[in-house]
Image (cartoon, rainbow, N blue to C red; front, side, top):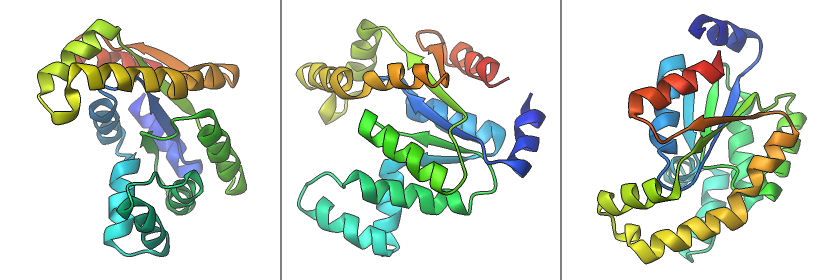
Length: 193
């Protein structure tokens, strides 16, 4: 199975998107999966920080928004991702993007422009009670129960519709994210087979 995906990379870059609610463990699982297949793990937060640090043209532009506390426009983020994908010769796992239908459509069009496509969208499905428990036990400032409920509402309003969007495209793979780290990762590997 691992060899199959590695061989495909020589012909076509495998692009995988991770979706799921806050606290589902997307970042951890995306990193572990990318390490397993020797793919690049691309977190939009890390990407933005790196572009700003390296003072790229897009990084400087993004920084103007970030300094004011504004969201970086989708077009800038998609251009950053496209710049990476143009030269990417191995698989890539997108973590944290897209988050809305508009972003998903823009990403699809941008990928079409560079003759690439999304291969799979992995949705980590976790019960809300488990999410609240996980997040409140992390002890971070933004993990206050009231903030968590608001983050879950925002996720439901903006990101949850992506599941239907990608289901219609036949790309979504639902993974039960309620189990142990090992069980969830093994389920991820099964859907990648």
